[in-house]
Image (cartoon, rainbow, N blue to C red; front, side):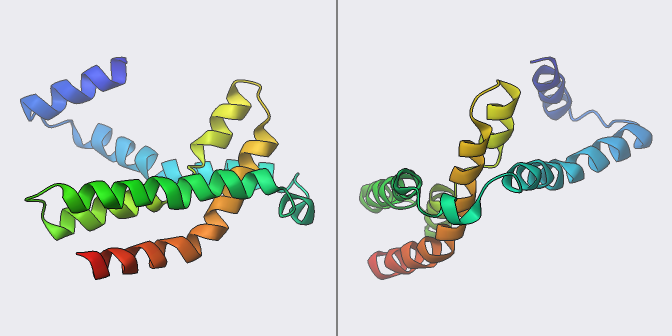
Length: 143
């Protein structure tokens, strides 16, 4: 909460941080995604890949995340007038992205079943290779 408040103050005041602080924050921001991927990779190494791919519930979760939610978003973006197509595509692509790796990080942080969370992230990431192009193509036909 303190970081959000400080960020809002800096944003609205247009105050510039000293170069050393700005550079340090840039380095930290650059580590955000690689560290999350590293943490998920370490957890994924503990999972049995073949066994993971046989879990039907993972496919059901992925179907909701990668098909149902994006189709609802696509329908809403189609009926709402006055939206630029670039904005429509940006929102649609965000909606069709896989389960975020933060799920696994937070599951481990709160002593939940993080291996199941990692499996959810892995399966949805593999399936999004198919669903993202399909839904973007469907949107290009509709819009």
